[in-house]
Image 1 (tube, rainbow, N blue to C red):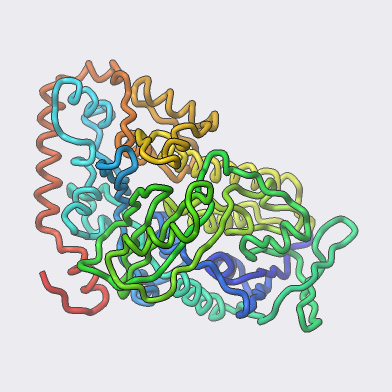
Image 2 (tube, rainbow, N blue to C red):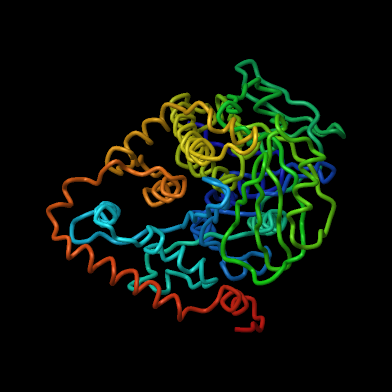
Length: 501
């Protein structure tokens, strides 16, 4: 066996520097050299300013102090996503992180709640989500510091400035021995067996390596242009193909959640950071021009722009092979699913997690490559199905865009999930999936999809016990949240600021 002695990361930004940071943490510098090539002339997209809870765990595993990271990246806390106008124009629902309710005896909470609803109980599912109740009241407290309490089942992520995250991770990686090379790759030389041998930079320098990680964005310089791996197109499932983004002033208190607000031809995001707000409009060019999108965005901002709005075209899907020969594609080079559920950074981290799990020797055993591609494809498809559900289940028909969403063909895997849920509220959960039962239940409930019946097994528990437990749990969550600090207060305590009540 010939171990890898040098890995070359091509491209910076969030994907390049996160990949580099993870490699530097897990690999000894004396055994494997890590080099990152990037050009300051090539800009990064940098609009992904929202994360999911596994990102917080990743920061901790890398040995990064969370408080220091929050200060350096303009971060705020995130308890979930508020969806406005998705099911119907006047509807609002919440996708919380963490659990919803706790089992009642040996019986599933959701099934007990379904039975209670069938008996006329009026509580909403989200009354039993600590994240939702905290979000509604603008409160925040880390659940890890309140484990055996009514909010102990909560979870959280972060809103971050993507450019500052890349800068932070660059410092982290360079402190651990990474070599950064400034330059633009102009040519890729391959060996007779198809593997990449070396790269040629614009000034003629050659960079050799045993393995190459493509973080060159939508260009896919290595995986696409050099190795010829095509992309699987998901535009039939996901209608949006453009975004227009802008930074604005903060207006009012910084909310502990992301907002996704449906519009005539897509949706707007609002992501509160410490010193500014990230806002944007994701839309379909079939139903909306760039000029109309800009007008819609500016009309709905609610605060002054800090820069000029910029249009970002994108395509949804992923490479048919995310890993080929001695090249791995990460981030936009590997695939993209629109930012509705803030999964972009998660998929970068997952890609590197699986690479480290199936870490190859120089020959890159095809069995490892096949298993990596299978697992990552499953991750992409899981995220795709979850996002398609938000669009396809709409009741809106007030614009051509939403009418088209009602006609989206469903992937077979999503159809099966919906039918299973409609039967008795059951959810299919695979190994190590991102979206657990509480996430699917929240979107199904928010989009008006209800089970036809509850599981008859819960008829074996006395209904009075269900009713009493629901009443007690709902009051306990509400009562504790009432005494938590506001998000502003807690954030300010972490930043050393003074905050008003």
